[in-house]
Length: 92
Image 1: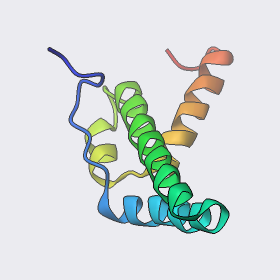
Image 2 (image 1 turned 30 degrees about the vertical axis):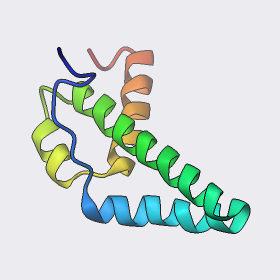
Image 3 (image 1 turned 180 degrees about the horizontal axis):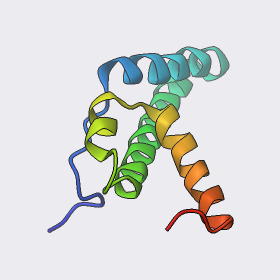
Protein backbone atom coordinates (compact mmCIF):
# COMPACT_ATOMS: atom_id res chain seq x y z
CA UNK A 1 0.00 0.00 0.00
CA UNK A 2 1.42 3.38 -1.00
CA UNK A 3 0.65 6.76 0.46
CA UNK A 4 -0.72 9.83 -1.26
CA UNK A 5 2.70 11.50 -1.33
CA UNK A 6 6.05 9.88 -2.09
CA UNK A 7 7.66 11.47 1.00
CA UNK A 8 6.96 11.43 4.70
CA UNK A 9 5.47 14.78 5.67
CA UNK A 10 6.04 15.91 9.23
CA UNK A 11 4.63 19.42 9.68
CA UNK A 12 7.07 21.88 11.18
CA UNK A 13 6.39 22.62 14.84
CA UNK A 14 6.68 26.40 14.59
CA UNK A 15 4.61 26.51 11.41
CA UNK A 16 1.97 24.29 12.97
CA UNK A 17 1.86 26.41 16.13
CA UNK A 18 1.41 29.74 14.38
CA UNK A 19 -0.87 28.69 11.52
CA UNK A 20 -3.09 26.18 13.30
CA UNK A 21 -2.98 28.17 16.54
CA UNK A 22 -4.17 31.29 14.74
CA UNK A 23 -6.92 29.27 13.06
CA UNK A 24 -7.97 27.94 16.47
CA UNK A 25 -8.14 31.40 18.05
CA UNK A 26 -10.15 32.90 15.20
CA UNK A 27 -12.45 29.88 14.92
CA UNK A 28 -13.05 29.84 18.69
CA UNK A 29 -14.16 33.45 18.55
CA UNK A 30 -16.54 32.71 15.69
CA UNK A 31 -17.90 29.27 16.57
CA UNK A 32 -16.84 28.37 20.10
CA UNK A 33 -15.14 25.10 20.93
CA UNK A 34 -16.75 23.34 17.97
CA UNK A 35 -15.39 25.99 15.59
CA UNK A 36 -11.98 25.72 17.24
CA UNK A 37 -11.78 21.98 16.65
CA UNK A 38 -13.08 22.12 13.07
CA UNK A 39 -10.95 25.16 12.18
CA UNK A 40 -7.78 23.55 13.47
CA UNK A 41 -8.52 20.29 11.67
CA UNK A 42 -9.11 22.08 8.36
CA UNK A 43 -5.99 24.24 8.76
CA UNK A 44 -3.90 21.14 9.54
CA UNK A 45 -5.21 19.27 6.50
CA UNK A 46 -4.55 22.23 4.19
CA UNK A 47 -1.04 22.67 5.61
CA UNK A 48 -0.07 19.04 5.00
CA UNK A 49 -1.69 19.03 1.54
CA UNK A 50 0.23 22.15 0.46
CA UNK A 51 3.54 20.76 1.64
CA UNK A 52 2.82 17.42 -0.05
CA UNK A 53 1.90 18.98 -3.38
CA UNK A 54 4.90 21.28 -3.40
CA UNK A 55 7.23 18.44 -2.34
CA UNK A 56 6.18 16.55 -5.45
CA UNK A 57 6.67 19.68 -7.59
CA UNK A 58 10.17 20.34 -6.20
CA UNK A 59 11.32 16.71 -6.31
CA UNK A 60 14.33 17.53 -8.50
CA UNK A 61 15.35 20.83 -6.93
CA UNK A 62 14.73 21.96 -3.34
CA UNK A 63 12.54 19.17 -1.99
CA UNK A 64 14.83 18.20 0.90
CA UNK A 65 15.44 21.81 1.91
CA UNK A 66 11.74 22.62 1.74
CA UNK A 67 10.74 19.61 3.86
CA UNK A 68 13.21 20.67 6.56
CA UNK A 69 13.04 24.48 6.51
CA UNK A 70 10.10 25.51 4.33
CA UNK A 71 6.66 26.44 5.46
CA UNK A 72 3.32 26.80 3.78
CA UNK A 73 4.16 30.23 2.43
CA UNK A 74 6.88 28.63 0.29
CA UNK A 75 4.52 25.84 -0.70
CA UNK A 76 1.57 28.06 -1.65
CA UNK A 77 3.52 30.67 -3.59
CA UNK A 78 5.68 28.00 -5.20
CA UNK A 79 2.58 26.26 -6.56
CA UNK A 80 1.29 29.58 -7.94
CA UNK A 81 4.70 30.47 -9.43
CA UNK A 82 4.97 27.05 -11.07
CA UNK A 83 1.50 27.45 -12.58
CA UNK A 84 2.34 30.91 -13.96
CA UNK A 85 5.69 29.66 -15.33
CA UNK A 86 3.95 26.77 -17.10
CA UNK A 87 1.34 29.19 -18.44
CA UNK A 88 4.06 31.25 -20.13
CA UNK A 89 6.06 28.18 -21.16
CA UNK A 90 9.04 28.96 -18.94
CA UNK A 91 8.92 25.85 -16.71
CA UNK A 92 9.01 22.25 -17.83
